[in-house]
Image (cartoon, rainbow, N blue to C red):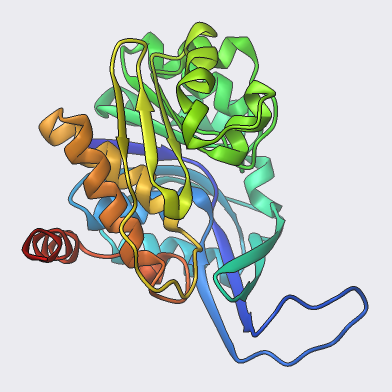
Amino acid sequence: MNLLVIGSLNIDLVIKTERQPKSGETIRGTDFVTVCGGKGGNQAIAAAKLGADVSMIGNVGDDDFGNMLVGNLKDEHIKVSGISKSEVSSGVAVINVFGNDNTIIVNSGANGMLNRHHIDKCKQMIMQCDAVLMQFEIPLETVIYAAKTAKQYGKKVIINPAPVYDIPQELLKYTDLLILNEHEASILTNIDVGMDNAAVAAGILCRLGVSEVLITFGRSGSAYFNGNTACIVPAYHVKAVDTTAAGDTYTAAFIIKYNECGDIEKSMKFASAASAIVVTRLGASVSIPARAEVDRFLAEQCVR
């Protein structure tokens, strides 16, 4: 599969603590790592590790972090001709991991500078891909323009609306597959979405123009709907260390497997396995498994 990811690239500054600090409180950290992240970068790396031919369009700062981010993509054999540099700082995310949860503060930096002119310069990349995957850590107007351009060339458009805010009808009509978690689904549909009413939420989104909807529920599993077909798959239970990049890995894994086999349930199980491995490790892109690891994990589940 030739996948084009258009999205954010951040340096993640990750500190692990025993609990979340209270307002005004200083506590000691137990671990600290600096890793390459950003939802776009994480999804691109996950797709590459899982077997896709990946290209990326993004924007970094003309700084050491920017060089680190581009170098990390190259190390994973991701095509980076679509990565531009701006005279602003690269995006940074400060992540506090405590217990099985985390909080994230993001400064978008150069990600906020990605615009339609970058997309126009990279139209050849859009023409050559099978599908375009985007998130909301870059300007919404850029996402809409890129989605419109992709549909003009007959490409599949996949949206992961995170961080979430209202999606314009124009973007929904360009969206083939919407992959989101229950919190994002609740905001977009104005109902409290759970596994028991996921079909209702998906129906709302499908009526707005989306062809397929996949909602993830963390340790509870995931649910897929396309108006005619429904599929619910439980999550694999593992001891979680850090949930960072689990959703990004699930997104990429589902896309890759679904493109390969066309089987919804198999693709959801593959994605669940990939994300289960991620949460057992600390960090974002460094926690993403290779294809062989996911296949081995699934084989072990069959034996049990």
